[in-house]
Length: 305
Length: 305
Ligand SMILES: [Mg+2]
Ligand SMILES: [Mg+2]
Ligand SMILES: [Mg+2]
Ligand SMILES: [Mg+2]
Ligand SMILES: [Mg+2]
Ligand SMILES: [Mg+2]
Image (cartoon, rainbow over all chains, first blue to last red; front, side, top):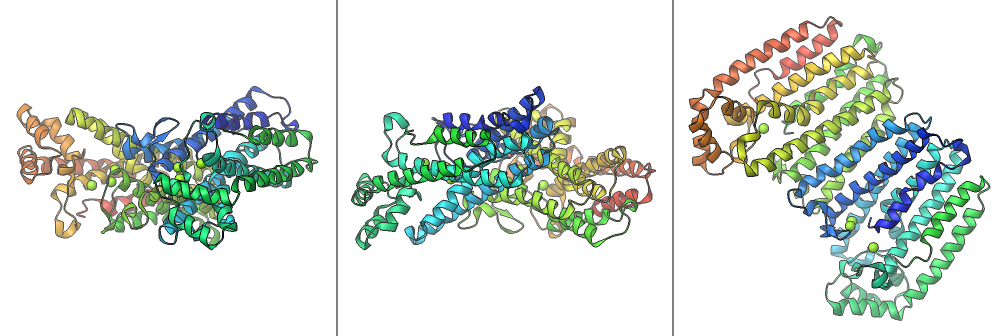
């Protein structure tokens, strides 16, 4: 939860792209509408999540504007607005995708996506609570992965492409499961990049100053650092992570430096890209699926903002 | 939104009762489970609404306990919890009502019910905003009716019985529409009682001291008073309604007294009960439907808490 605008818009076009699948047959007006409805539905789902997330995180701004709940005359009615955004997705899909023989599967995918994201937000909330007591103990790679896959990868990567495949008439549930796995791993990679850029991105390119260290966020960098740090370094992280002062942030970054976290990320990134490319190549299920996955990967690989 | 516990539990048994409809045929284990799932689903839908409503209304307590968002360690994560409660309804219904040929209709009824309730909350929120500027202008009987039907009657009366009928296999859409209309009018009557009891109920019976006048709520009593008040009385209402002080509340009650609002309510109540009884009798669609509607009406008519 925390996308740049551009990315989202490109990702949302996925269902539209996915109607190019050979199974889809002719691109009729009906299917074009169906694909557009999926895109709108995903936007509304995301908007609903973001409105709620900002309330829960007590955020001030979103995309350089005040968060919705902070707008004059909105306040906590934003809770109801978020529900409304989400609730009308069903009508939208019903009005434009009902003719698809996979309509119910598409709807169930949206339901499942919503449930996973909610579960991810819940896990994330629990981590924050626990960090209150014994701060960094919970930040293991396993837990980190679970949180980002649930709270980001399902709705941002899995649902867009799989819903498109379903609309295109894809019925091979094994293929769908296999593609789904790759999408979740792409989503995971996307979030680790987000964490990396928060700390090491070029502000003139990313357009925002990172605050993950100050905010005590459970990030890839922190989790990796905790994995390889010695007792003294762990102690420093424990004492300075999640503190607002520039001095504390500096100390955390100093530990990252000592541990060569940047290099660790770069080599994790190369390994991940290789693995992903191999998985994508191994699909013998028609060129289009591989091509789509490759284009998603190309969209985000080694991105600098 | 603001039921006493007992009522809700009785109303939630409605889908169970409704499986007694002749169309249902034998009461199989499967249908018993389906009916229980409807009951649970309604409870979860309501809980989700109440958690959100308490956040939006900044309420302190619910059923004599702190509101969920005020519980230690919960806070605004309650927003996510409310979504989760609602989100799992689909799985619940899918697991237990999927065999019904009306499964999709049942799900769509839940969706529609949710959307109506959200719309009702929205209307309600807008009234509160507007009241900020030119306080009592918006409190017309038309608007009042719309708000209470949307925010309360659909989920509390309409959905429970109609979902039960659908599960029982009822397919007559005209009958469903006609029964639905009566249920909405029963729900409307229920809320007017709630408003009456807030002001004139016996605290030793209702168990709570009303605060609608202090809170500036748009109630049946206020709307009726505004309909028949003269300029001077309107002025008093305008100046004193929605104020916390005992003196202001006293002045409002004084105007109610002058206008014989209690009598107006009693005669509205008798008229409504007659109309409802007549509509219920006019169903020639089998004894069971009329019997169920009658039993709902008997459950709430002239209630004192
Ligand atoms: Mg956030
Ligand atoms: Mg968050
Ligand atoms: Mg970030
Ligand atoms: Mg309330
Ligand atoms: Mg309310
Ligand atoms: Mg009340």
